[in-house]
Length: 295
Image 1 (cartoon, rainbow, N blue to C red):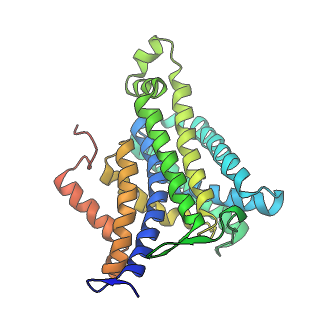
Image 2 (cartoon, one colour):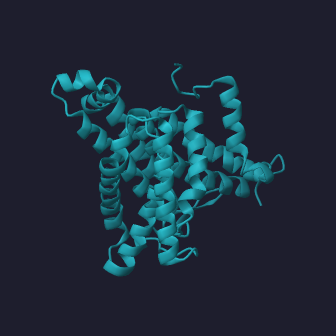
Image 3 (tube, rainbow, N blue to C red):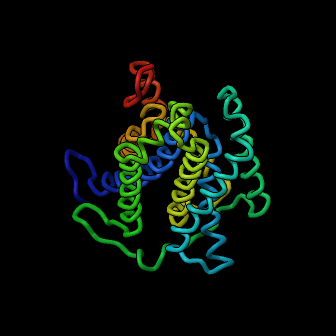
């Protein structure tokens, strides 16, 4: 057994891997939340339910339509994105100019309805979803065994997060998007269709939640509660990174996954609360978050 300063390197590297995987999901979900809140000022409590919906869509696609993992990885985020667009157009837009509390309560209600429906249809037990054949097996590294599917999740999530950050922060399309949400009257005067931008942005954020759900289906049980269990943690990560900070959500999501993994090794009793402890410390010292802008 490999040890260094009485530290079991096999166990430590295993927890770090789990931390990186959880961090990848945190980053993807926090990115979607940060986009929706940062650009649209909507507190979206239905984000966890959309993540759950993505996992169930992949499962039902495989069970009833023979839709394999790779097709689900493309089609499910598109479907969840369209569902998000319908939510924005029919339920959220009418209260867009009201206090943030209204959107919070509305999206929380949507989440409860979706979770209740899926619990009624499928029960509360987790459903299995097989790892695709191409990503089964793993690689034995000096200090750990690295399953291929877990490595795929980390790499794919990083590529999606980096691509989204580049699109919003470095391209002309992202500039239009930021300007359209910060000063919609001015952009409309230039002929930019701001309501369409808002709708597509919400749909994109919802699609990211659906994508995270498809990625999670093979390693977590597909269950109605899977979204509510992770949502509070993701909200804490968005607060730590800075509400609305795209880069902050990505970096903080990955970092908190690693911190959580290390805590599970060195002090397991605190692993479920360490992210919230970090959030309290950050709010006490930097209320706008690590990467947020002071008002």
